[in-house]
Image 1 (cartoon, rainbow, N blue to C red):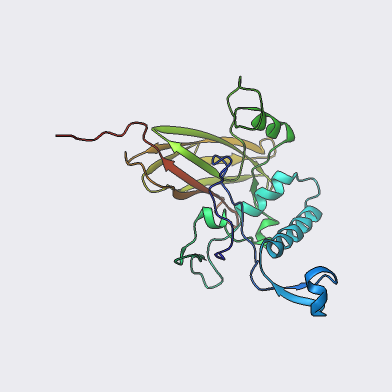
Image 2: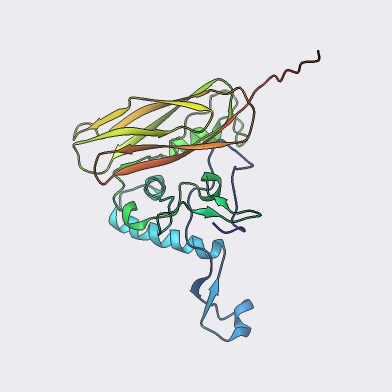
Amino acid sequence: IAAFSSRGPSPIYPGVLKPDIAAPGVYILAAAAQSGAYKSLGVSYVFDSGTSMACPHISGIVALLKSVHPDWSPAALKSALMTTAHTMDRNGVPIEANGKRAKIADPFDYGAGSVNPTKAADPGLIYDISASDYLEFFNCPQGFGSNNNCTPPDLNLPSIAIPGLKTSVTVVRTVTNVGQPNAVYKAFMEPPPGVKMAVEPAVLVFSNARRVQSFKVTFRATRRIQGSYTFGSLAWHDGGAHLVRIPIAVRVVIEELYSDAS
């Protein structure tokens, strides 16, 4: 991940994990506009870097996915991209994040990981969100709306961010089976350090009559130490080709800090 790439957490609402996903954006061969800064170069193609290079990759992949799944919502397309992203490079080594010091990348560097177009076409499960879900979320006290008489719902994102875990928090997510109608998925957890995770139910059984199922994820702080974010993941695996993984970011917060004056 390039040093100039934007990082999380979101300064506006850290309860939504950002960024979502990473795509190629460094030294990309692209067509040069015959106006503006490129006009004086007199060339048709240039190597360029930045979000302007990464965004077309994602846009093109989404266009291809939409042609394969024309009935999918924008949220479903986003879910397919995120839950099938990979966190290893082509050599099977964890993706690194460049900066003042290189380090192993985490969800605040690349979101769910690096996009994988082939797997995104067949994600197995999707985390879908309707327009009314978004309206309800933004109309609650997030700092975006004026209605302060409601509790912010769990927006069904393919990620989980908890910026203030004091004791325990339970998050609800809903998945839709878009693969084989009769499928069984088991939960596999990588809890963030200092946090205990529990998933209920830990097995999801789908059929023609039951394509949509919800589950709860409970997080409990195991260390009463206030610190920075730690990261983990939750994946649903059908024992075959489908591994549906979402990133998790948690920060433990202690309301009262005590000191010993003796």
